Structure formats: C-alpha cells, structure tokens
Length: 460
Length: 81
Image (tube, rainbow over all chains, first blue to last red):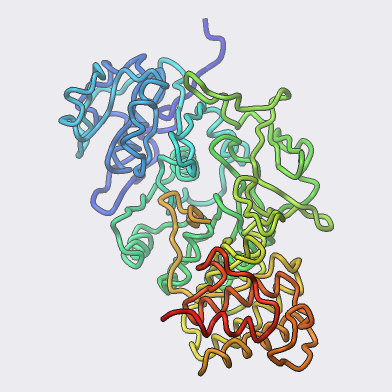
C-alpha cells in the first residue's frame, strides 16, 4: 500500500553532502550529520501523530526541530517571535495542540498541554527516524491586530516553487535571509537551503546590522533575501560594501524601481530579483528582469500557477497555496473556484502590471481612496531619497490630507532639504492626482519596520 | 518672522506650487478670490500648524472659517500663547 511516496524534510538531507551547516550568531550545527542527531533529547517518538506547538526563543532550534518533526508529527504550528502571548490560548484551541516543543518548559508546567518537550543545543546523538506521514505545517498570518489566522500548508505546497525551479548549477548555495524562518518568507529560504543541498545562515534580532553583514560575509553567503524595507535599511547603513552575494531577492512588500536600482548599484555583480508570495497564496512568481511589477502575460496559467485580476486585486490558484484556514470559526481561504484573493491591488500600464498597494491599506483623503504605496513609489524614485512613508493626517478643511515622512540617502547635504522637498513635490504633482500629492513632507532619520520586516503602517 | 509674514509667505509658496495666480493680497480680499481650492487651504493649514504649532480651526469647535485674508491671518495672531 503506497498510494504516493511522502517526502519529509529528512528525505532531502543525507550524509553524502559534506560541510553543510545551519548557523546563527552563536552556534553552528552540521546539516550533514543532522539525521543522526536530535535537539529534542531523543523524545521524537513521543511526538508521533501529535499536534505540536513550536514555541522556541530562537530560529536555530526551531529549524532543527522542524527537520525532526516533519513527517512524524500530525501537524506543527510555527510561532513567530513577535507572537502576542495573549493569543496563545486561542491558537492552541483552534489548532487542537496537544504537545509543545519549547526551551522554557517551566512556562508550560501548568498549561494544560499534556506533553512538553524541551529543545536544547547542542544536538545529541540519536537513531535516524523514518518518515511516517505528511505533516501539516501551520503558519500564522502577520499584520493583523487581532488573533492571527492559522494557515494550513503541506511541505509539498511550501516547496512547490523550489522544486519547479530545479537545482542551480555550480556549488551549493549558502542561503541567508533577514526574515525569521518561522514566517512564510523566511521559511521559503530555510526550505531552499535544505532542498538545494546548501547551508543556511540565520538572522538574529539582537545583532547590529554591521555585525550581521560581517557574519554573512564570513560564512560565505551567496544567496540572500529580505523585504524592500530590510534592504533599504542595509543600503542606508553603509554595511553593504564588500559583501557580494550572487543572488539578492526581495519579497514581502512592493519592490519599487528605486530599491531595485539601489541594490543593482550596491551589488553590481549580483542578480537581483523580486518574488511575489504570501502566507496564504504561496509563491506566485519571481521577476528577474530588474524591473518593478511583472509582465502582463504572467496572468493566465503559467508553470502551474493561475492568476487573474478581480476588482483590481490579484487572485492566485496553484498547488502552492495554503489549503485552508484552521480553527473553529475559520473563514474560507479561497473563492468558489479555488483562487486565493491576495488583497494586493495591481494596475496595468502598457504590457506590465504594477502593485499599487494593499486593499486593506487604503487611506481616505476627502472621500477619495489613496494607496500610500503609490505615493511612496513616486517619492522613492527621487535620487536623494532612500525610503518614505505616506499616511493621512486630519484636516479641518478636507477631513484628511496626505503627508509623507522621507529618509534621504546617506550623506545627503542637509542644506539641500528645501530644494529636494520642492523637487519631490514637483514630481508628485507631475505623476499623481492632486489629492495624492503630499501636503507636507517631513525629513526623518528613521521609519519603523515591523518584526515581519514591513514598513509599519499602524497609525496610518 | 511675524505670524503675519509666515502666513503670507506660506500662501505665496502654495500658490506657486499649485500654479495659482494670486491677486494682490490685502486684508479685505475674500479667501474665495485668492483662487485657492479646499485642498490648497488644507495644505496651508497643515503647513502653518507645523510651522507655528497651532491649528486655530481645529482648536475651537465653533470657530467659523474666516472669510477674508485679514480674518485668516488674525486667526493665527489671536491664538493664546
């Protein structure tokens, strides 16, 4: 009885590829030997068939626990580091959690979760386990203010885009990401590292950017991904010098032409690509021509991913999307035809589609709908601008007006501020409807970025 | 710079940006005759708030929006310190 062979993460690992590692700022663990090692104190058998909450304070143990649990647990729920503890009980109930893997077992003593397994480093020796089942991967949505939604994936769906791209020629890549691997964008990179036969360098939220980049260089990182906000921060820091990855990837936010050009200038020998993916819709596509947006002929059916635009919003159907929201009052994940509505609004200009913003991120200006991202894209195109954020501000005259906070590129002469402000406004007036032109432009030193790597828009 | 000259300068700057041909500014000129639309006034009030720290039209619920340039300037001059 073998209806279909089930592959788990362990089946992509093996002792034949030497020198593979996964590392963070403190520890390096060999991936070559990982199948005969355990971070779970050899207690993996107890977790067989369980619904496991993965609640660890670091990415390294999380990644190693994922490798062990995949194919053994019935489901595993990945908790990102910024998860509000107040939401844990609801998530445990909705996901039917009956075991927790943690590094803080004392916190779980009276929790009502029947099985608590401690994850610890360094790994200890154990007998290799065999894949028993297709484990359901549960991830949490980001960006919602209430209890996050639980999104159900399979490893097959999560790795669909990676398998479709096939393996690259040349030496196995060393992957890194600014994301946390317990979020969709970061998990994609972790899975790429495992499936490609390569290594993985994890981020650390407590590490200074300059130290992080030094570590990326020291570990020979060749492939690296982050959000446009992550990348703008790197460009602003001046730490990018001497770091020369072969492949630079952006996802998670709109990659505008300014950030693509900025990366191309900072990494002249790298290929720079942006990918479209979300926790629910999975990986839609990658764009590698150096231009913002995507070719209009990506709509329709392309490499098994079907895309269409309904009411301006991109809808995606493929085997890479999540299969359901999980929980008692979970909404339907797809429309009647099986398409996931991304909520990302696109606009066709010529033979290309451009992302203009999130449907939920619209600000209201005197009764007119405005996507802040559309304004930021125009501002960011000014050569002296590194990053910007548009938002609404109350006005006694019109109800609301657009204002923008702008970060200038490093080393810009502050006495040019007025001149630059006038130029930005001139560009905005030339390219945007008058109600979208910022009434006030403020120059700021920093803009908040969320733990998920996206520009914070909470007070918009 | 006096409050009056700050207000007048902001009006001229926004007129330039919005490509509005301002008539000669006098206290008696009605705001309607400046050629400013509501968006231009909204910009003016927002910038003056950043510049002077006050928005006289939001502070007082019952403040009628001024009718003339002179009324507008006085709304800023008469804000209690």
